[in-house]
Length: 98
Image (cartoon, one colour):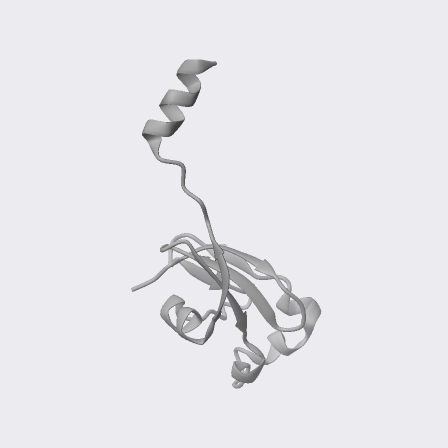
């Protein structure tokens, strides 16, 4: 199971989403905006009002619309970006030199 750590707007109905495994994927939601809860998201200005809800680990909109993080991961296209983690031992050594 995946969870969303961060998301940013990437144009049209696309989000750039970083997941718990530090993979970043471009997610195009345009084909999936069917049904009453997703209808408002067709308006790009409303679509941009998303946020990451840390309680449910996914992207949500003010009207309560959301997508499963596993679904977002499965339809996303890998951007080739991976968040870099600095090991704590390296961080400690670099601080000690300062």
